[in-house]
Length: 599
Image (cartoon, rainbow, N blue to C red; front, side, top):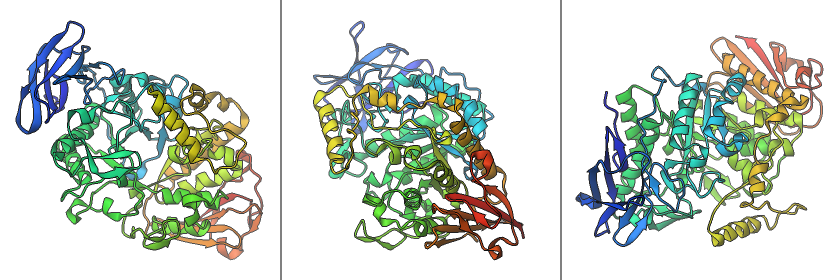
């Protein structure tokens, strides 16, 4: 069967190179090969596109785009080793895939592991991740979520400053390295989710606007101009991003995309760009008889993002719930400033278990308005929850993990709170062994003025934060190096203990008939704020569980009437996880007990 090819950019496909670039305001467009100064003139086509089919560009060749009197890299390039220098031709179809029999797990079965390629291993490459897949399998992971890999300035970045959306970061292993990783994951039964950024581009090396009106002045995002999804000439912009989605699914066999901050995608078209993307993914799934997911990061608590296309929704398969995280952190004794001020601890956490959205039309003091809509009727697998993620760790001044903020026992309780939920659980890399390394904000820009602006902006952001510590310099390589996981910690007893605990939790999640279900019907959550205790009951057809979470620092009594029909199946204070178990009618400080009853 002939492999489909990307419809935009410079594409080596079926033995020849086809070029199709959108440059609506140019009078002439050509490709320059700097090695021998060959110039390939493109022909003007309809709607601002310029095209050519040629054998003069082969895989590995460097090239620039010539727009009238400008020499520029190709913003749609598939290889861009230096964001300010020549692009390179890639052959995406040379890789020999061996995953033809791969079938992605059902979304309700996902155990997601979020990782940053550059700091997950000492090497910071796709190849190095492959060497750790057996560790993740042993943990119980069946899906990894890669933070963005689109080419960014230098070698150190979270990925949200990407400026070449089709090029895979060269320092990670470029496009061939990503293909190798995905293939290796599929061979081991692990799905791959890729974080993509469709709400903005980074500030350095963003050449898209030299080619056409890719941005609009109609809106602003927290990171600059909004991408032009609904203004004049937006059709080609929408096509570019739809082609980007299909690239990851078709040419990299990515199983799902996590769409960054979709609330910052501004589009008042009759058909929102997310809905159009979903239509194309559905068509791709149908054609290839495969399943691919779209997971949105959204802070609007708007069920329209999850509603089907037939009901004028955007039909995202799932979305992150930051509110679960916020409620959990406050329950654990975390700070209550900023957006945390809206959350009252275990009563908010009980509502998150019960209703998914904590604010579903309620008044939000932080926002000073009523906020959100009801998530009633939406299955649990439509939501992803976590006790940590890259944002909630890295956006702190010092990038502290839970391991640096909470006691060992509280970390265990927080982890359990995620896995007993009816939602999809997600871990942040290293969480499973209580990694000690922070995850700080880092960059490697080359523009000195931009570097200074980022450094000063970071200091200003935390100016009111009282600490003896200095704000880590985002540009310093030491900030990046400090954020790398220290895998040798797993040789020490306390880290081994936490890892064993996480394995037990994940095993319970994957095998217990109640916890492996994402059924929300019949779930009941009750908060005893006086004693800082939370009770969660869930059931399957013939099994009922009662989870008792003690967020207080005191040993608490359990009424015999509460558990008399149940048998204990899990205690986070079990001594095999270095805890201090107490009697049957007691629960240890900062612990969870899980009881089971046959219906």
